[in-house]
Length: 87
Image 1 (cartoon, helix red, strand yellow):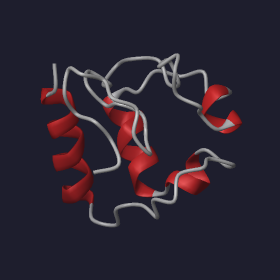
Image 2 (cartoon, helix red, strand yellow):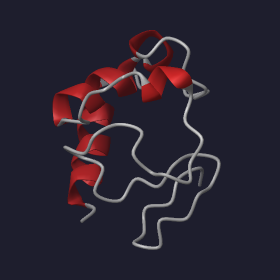
Image 3 (cartoon, helix red, strand yellow):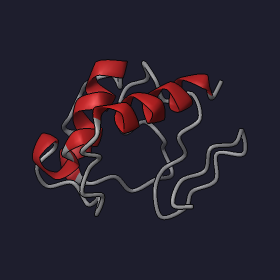
Image 4 (cartoon, helix red, strand yellow):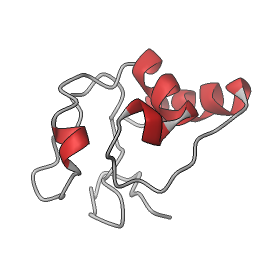
C-alpha cells in the first residue's frame, strides 16, 4: 500500500493515515508534502476528505498525489468511515 494505516506511522510513498480524520492537513514532520497540501491549512474533516477523495487534483491543485479520485459516493463514504475507524 502507499500509506501506512498502523500505529507505526511509517513513511511510505504517501503519508501515514492513522487518526487522520479531524487532524490538520500536512502535519507529519518527516513527510515531504506538496506545497498545495502544506498551504491547504484545513483539518481533514469527514466532509473535506469526501471532497478531496472525489477529485484530489482539482480539490488541492498542485498536489503530488496521482490518485484520480473515487467517482462513487458510496466508495468515498466507505473509505472515510474506514479512516475514521483508525484510532
